[in-house]
Length: 179
Image (cartoon, rainbow, N blue to C red; front, side, top):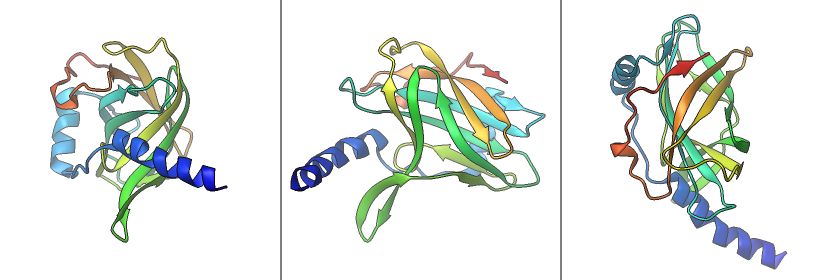
């Protein structure tokens, strides 16, 4: 039991490092980015942009996926899962501070309020990726699919980044959304 506690304590900093620093969400910025990237689905009333997958520094460790999702709906929508092609398991997580300690936990499902956005980014909501196919390589792309509570699915192309690549410099032009 003691060994398990020590291993968990050693693993937490590595897992939190994949999550990074907190990113503030500006709803206006999310709307503008979604329009600029033309990554919307008029039928679903959603815009998905800036999808990227960061590979782990050490093979066998989890990777992470980030993206922005904006709703143009008049009613709330609930995200129940995210899938990434080439990944065995994807779990939505949230990094937050509780009693002065930074913790990461499963986010369960995520409610997106009408005409609001959510940014999956370092330090907040993110998708932990487990059992990553060794064929996924930095510079390539993969498919990222969001499933809503009503069963609707929304997919986009995600850029694959290496462990040290700066997300602020990535080229998102030409990324297309598919249904």
